[in-house]
Image 1 (cartoon, rainbow, N blue to C red):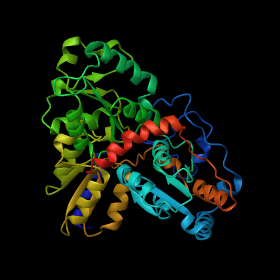
Image 2: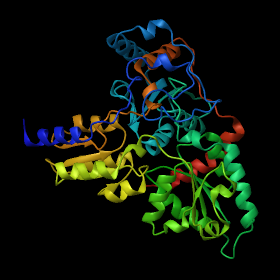
Image 3: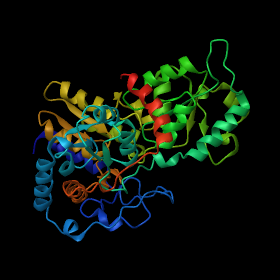
Image 4: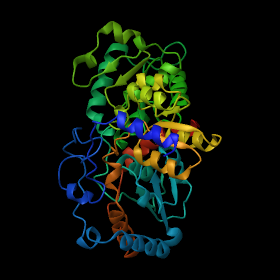
Length: 421
């Protein structure tokens, strides 16, 4: 066994003892009618009562072999031709990603939605908020489908419209709504892409904007040009890490708990605030720890540690770099042969990068396979079912955002697209 292989084995053994179920890997339809996100990183998160449920998948798809599903998908794609656009997020499983016409992060996929106006049907292999965004940005004659309606996002579900509006009302009572001498509003709302269409629309109505992990710093720059403070939701970690890198002190970033008066803050803490952070997080990225980074460095002294900015601040500080999924991918592609990378993001992307770049040693900081519970709900069986429906003239699992919400959300999304990373 090579020295590198021995070191990798030793690293993985050093992380032994952790556990995460991978029960969604082969037959996610077992969980379609159960009110939970399912096994994986989000299995302990609370699923809202109003979250969409996936109807029963026909037995011919549940019982089909991998080869049969592959043949169905390929045949349907051939029949539909240019009328079909399949979008796939980096975190999707390989057996789904291989059928996507475009693979990317949230920012890239939002742009890709605009890039194929000739496509009549968009099938989004990602999660619910991404499909909503595609519907908002697409042409009215285009349809958008999500292969499994149970593919939501626990982080997105941590901020709902009623709670954000209650927060906004409390902040408005503190600071009013008058512009300052420079024409800046008291507060500008910024929502992460990982949020509902309703929250994107809220930002559009209140002079705000959407951000992704690719352009969060540019978005915050824009927001501060428009307002004295920023309300950032739902991911506290992306907001904190981005603002800290811009020189904003931690004492100027209070955390807002929607279940407590004034978000659990004293008035003086809010008066000092530059960025008010929502009490949300990604269950995948919160699994990464400083101890994992230290262990990787012990086993690989020359390792380059790159983590996603949704990781906790201590993890981002301990890493060599932090960046979006696209940043991670480009960093690996640009590295000279023989580099060693420890990556802190979802396991599907890390394992795919390791296979695509055998010239490097690439491994996940958390070697326990704990996929995004909701991304893993997209299985080839659902994709085949959706595509067969399109061939038959039936749009299944169509995602529709109402006209008023779509109009306001598009305002915030177009501001995001203008903030090039």
